[in-house]
Image (tube, rainbow, N blue to C red; front, top):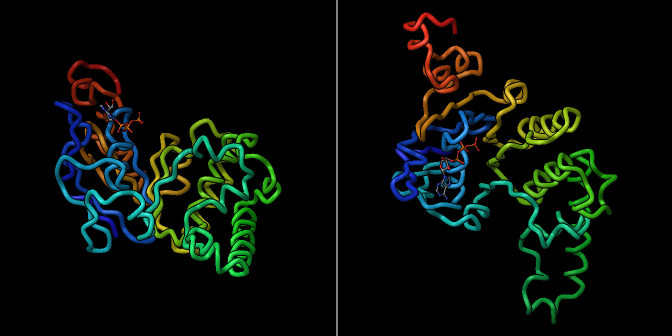
Length: 262
Ligand SMILES: Nc1ncnc2c1ncn2[C@@H]1O[C@H](COP(=O)(O)OP(=O)(O)OP(=O)(O)O)[C@@H](O)[C@H]1O
């Protein structure tokens, strides 16, 4: 579905992504792991059009999407979740969902003059859709709560909900687990699995929480120092010596030589 071919992203002389090549298979929940500073978020941002790559190619279903801006990718069904923007925080959760850009007639001046009835109908449909999304995510009780009054985990669910307001095909999630309690993390995990199974979403998930990765992701891709080190099931990744070296820093071989137990 997505291929990343020899992508580089340099910040001055620093190679944050240094020749990453990988494939994201349609229908998968792919985990992207790696030590801090491995280049995971930078690679996400390149794929999602937030950053232009220094070189390399990204394709989606065979189409070259390298360097396309986020709003163009959004209309192709490729979404990266972001924290709810400052100006949306005083809105209710339902309104946050209803604000996701679509093709509402109300956005066009012509229709504000000539299509009031149609706008009202669309607004009703949008509201019903937002309520359906809130119900799917089991947060219907938050519909009228301001977005800045809900917990961190509930905000993450809302961010996921925003992807459901449009016909997302592939969603990039960056550290949904950070600072979220276990119960809500399970709710988020379940929502991801249901979206994957019931609505054919493909996910790419950056996460440090290995239990979360274990529950959700196959395959798992491990990056270090801007490169893809390994790809496979989590068990395979955990057994991969290069991966262990990357996480431990000094490396098993060196430790063995020094007579240190790994
Ligand atoms: N805009 C930027 N300018 C300069 N350096 C940057 C920039 N963005 C990222 N970097 C550097 O690139 C490297 C990779 O960062 P990135 O955030 O992609 O890593 P990561 O694998 O997502 O790490 P983490 O797991 O800690 O979030 C880091 O050393 C970071 O400091």
